[in-house]
Length: 525
Image (tube, rainbow, N blue to C red; front, side):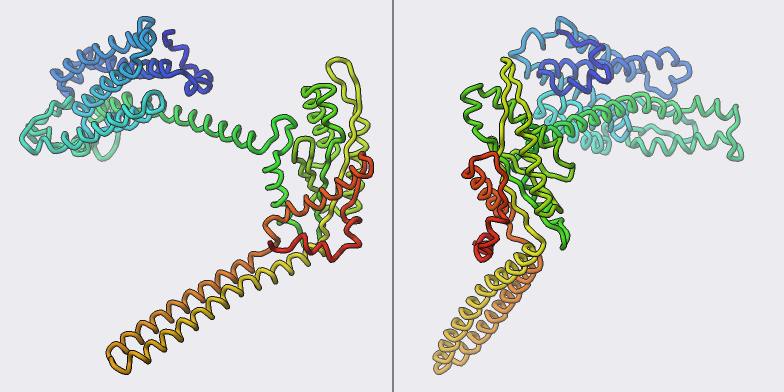
């Protein structure tokens, strides 16, 4: 299928340019090149038509050669984007045709660099913009090699005139007072500076009148600046638009990836990993006087639903239960799918009595919800729930004990290290005393070595102490505190199942008589 101009629609391009096959992208690149070369061909036509005015600014011999080259390029790339394009007919040789496109376009840019000047706006946009556009559409290795070739060409164009060689230049200046026979030695910036001085001489007393404006319009500086804008600006705008589209696509892809990673596809709830992350962040953000409640919910006899009604109905049950939870809970609640038929609900800043009330309401809402399958069968489902609330008093006690344990553990390696250093110092001292009986010079060297070792050891001890102090200051709660809270709620959940299911059990009530055992759950392993 040939590429047509209609493919360049704004929305169409935004949706499909990076989703096309390699052959489509190669055809699209050929179309872009065709549009660029055609615009330059029209510029040559305009200069030829008005050569009586602009002929003194343009080297017509170079222009005719460039025009012939542009005509051949237009014919070739018109063939590449037509229905007779070999890109479509010979897909096995796709890379070969990509290389041909890159080679011809590279030669074209090289000609532009030569005749327009390597430091001109057109050369810069053609070099950088062409490479960026090519890397988005075809094989990057070809484009990269062509780009490096252009870098080498720029150095050659810069150095060749200093060896007495003349490079064809499309731009020429006719002046009677200042000979420019060696214009090839001038860079674009130098020629522009000269033309600016010429243009400035047009003004009288620094005032622009209609007469002087007409003279300025016909000046060499104005002609070449408008030429550069005509050749470079549309391409620059298009390249920026293309990269804007690419960034939008990358942003959308990133959002989709984050959604798939953080959201359960079936229930549209938070995934287990993301739910635990949100739970940890919420726990660390709690105030000193705020409680933290966790609810673990498991659907009763869910395996029987899959066996009796099929997995599709089981998926329907999970989805509808998830929607029931979202409707019954506030936005501050963190709801995630914890396992197959298990749901984790985190209630920041919620006391235990409130958490129990919420859990009982959830159990009732789920039990009253009617599941309607596609075959017309209606049934209800129940849930068992375990609840645990970490009170602010218990959290403060855990933080205090955790800091004490962390300080104790960090102090042990420091003491062992200091003991080891003392033993090494004693051994070195004994060796030094023994050696000093026979060799005084050796004694001096050993003493210096011992002093150096002692200094390094002190630095290491000081560094370890600072690091231990930093860790103690940062210590808030054990790193796996979330898993331990869920573990306590899970014990209450299993108790609810043992009581006949469709029950809400409080882990706080279960552990009320076993306060000494709670500390074990938070011990540093």
